[in-house]
Image (cartoon, rainbow, N blue to C red):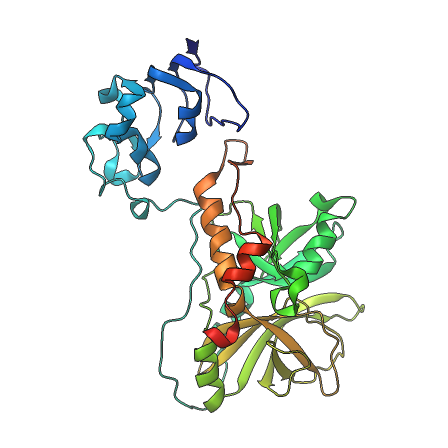
Amino acid sequence: MVDLSENKLFNIQIGNDVKLRLTELSLSKNNLKELSERIKRIMSSSSLLLLDGNPWTCNCKAKWLKDPMLSRQIRVHSSNDIICKSPNKLHGKKLFDLTDKDLSCQTTKDRNSTALQMCEASTFVKKRWYTPRSVRKALLSRHATIVDDKGAPIVNGIMVSEDWVLTIGTRANDILQSTNPNSVRVKVGRTKGYRNIVRTFVHPLLQYGSEFNVALLRLRYHRRSPDQSCIISSKQYSVLTSIFKHIIVTTRMTGKTGKFAKLKPRKGRISKPCSQKNLICATIKRPKRPLMLMEGSPMYLGHNGDYRLAGIGVNVPAVKDYKYDFIPLWSVSNWVQDVLDEYNAKCHFNSRGVDVCEELSLPTLKDMEDRIRRPEQH
């Protein structure tokens, strides 16, 4: 028997190489909100498991405890004392009295939960183009700037959800290989504060082509988050650009001191041909100050204040007339959603603000070669 009751435990992790066969395990009166099904690896046949006295989150992750097949291996002691703490609608109810429909992850808005928003099918009508101040403010609030320890911008990015930034993959690799990657932070919009980077995920097809030169940055949880902008598909892009070619790019401009400081929206137009296949190219209106940090800058396509996120600037030098290339986000949308789903399912933040994860099963290079969605296939 192993008695771990009343130890203020908030997480139990079971490694792949653990060789235990417990006949009884007590986890009573701790701070456990959920328990991984991997606990079965260390329990012997007809073993006893005590789980009462914990603040359980009753969602889809708790379904395995009610599985009738579980009783053949593990007997949950005092099952009537396993009470739900969250979500609010299930607060105070007994876990074993709930149905599978009650135990749905959709009923719980986890602070780590995210879903990539793809734009719904729309009919685009050509209208006069203008940019209301409120719309510009909303676009700038979604802009992310990765800065060094002195606050100098390194690369731009876009908030694809409340706690995730999509940026350039090669730059993310440089940050990971730097002497002090923890000194790199993220500035969201025009806010004064900074947010710390918890984890970095680089696209496995980074060397495959510029259209996959992206990375995801998981930020520490923050209550105030900008609204998300939906991502258009390649078909929507084709329809929209056939009748309307105006864009807006949010980017960092050089200030009076010559440093990249001011976050500004810049107007432009879709242009062809592009320097590389499967990229979006656009000509940006020439600024008063010639330098712009375009790498990672989000590009929006739309009209009348209704702008749709289409791409981010790639590290390709501007040619004549300020023509830049952008990575189409529909080409990486599947990978982004895979990472978000896997992280949300297997990671959480503990009381110290540290993210604790089980073993993540992220798409490999071979997986992505088979599953990647090419723009022409949308």
